[in-house]
Image (cartoon, rainbow over all chains, first blue to last red; front, side):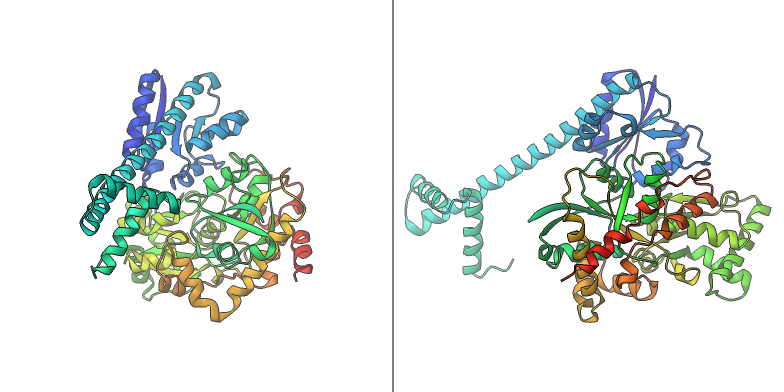
Length: 195
Length: 335
């Protein structure tokens, strides 16, 4: 059994990565946030592999485990030190860094690293999908509000109001949502709203 | 316009890089600098090694570590210019400063006096069987780590046995000091000042009270980079020199502190940065400050040996890290 520590400031991502690794194989997992007790907690768990967000400030805390003369029972070395070029690039793009115990066979780590990279990537995709969905919802709301304004001011029907807005957006080469937001801003300024 | 990605860690001594990118000095040299704010030295090192960053603000000892091929340092780095000398401060928790003042009968000002106070605190702690004091620095290979050990050793405290020396990112220092998980720390501005503002402790002394002209941050690049053309390095160095001259002008101080305080730079209030800089003794400008000194490599590797961070170091290519030749070439062609 492989002992894997997942260090992440984001508990949702930590849980997602951990769940993925649990499915993938025989591992004992510990998820941790980077706090000032990070080193103590890690040493107590004595992991074979530490997975940590590439940008996590706690990485410098981990680095002291490599100092010669440190009294840490199981020194760990960074995977990318000996990994193949492609692995390094993939890991960095996915935003994960991995530290593994010296002397562990690469074959045993491969599935963990692959699983971690896949999960970090999936999390990123999920996040951007969520942002896109939020953006789409905001667009629809603002377009509806502008449509209502046009209908009222110009006394036209809903379809005509939509067409006017769409044509203007095409002419100005802007997204309809963006155009709607600037029209709403202009409208609120003209009405003297304080915001 | 050639585009370069340049990494920095949110510290005041990244000023030369930030100003070069933001105030048009890089553009004047035909460079577009894309700044990347990094949250750990480990991430700066790794992104630099794999080419995700073209250059970065680094701790000078990281250059030496890269040539000694210490664990995780996979590609050798060189510095065509320094970014700062000096500036670190030692901040102690309120509990520890009170203990020291109590023992000594006065509040010390000098590092040696603080050291005497702490030696007493440790001796009494040993007798009571308490937990050892913990001091934090920012990275294992840093002038901060050397300074803490030197200061304690001078006071008769064995830094490897009598205390814990640990690593924490600067942003976590004030909280760690406040909650008591560390008793003191060494960091560059503005983090000591910030801990004071949080009421967690006080800046006891400045590194310049012990030693001056200590190599602090350097601008690091990969030693070999097949994608780099001959003009990139001199252009970048000239942009940094121009930035440092802008910083040297007192009239620009307000703009500088305002710029550094932005969230995507250091992200701390301008007045905190100003008061931290004023007293820290940090040097950011002057050709003699920026010019890399090959002797830095020897000083750093000696310190690493002294504190048992490395075995005796056969440091080859000692002149390959701090490249005064590249600096002079750029300086001499400055329009």
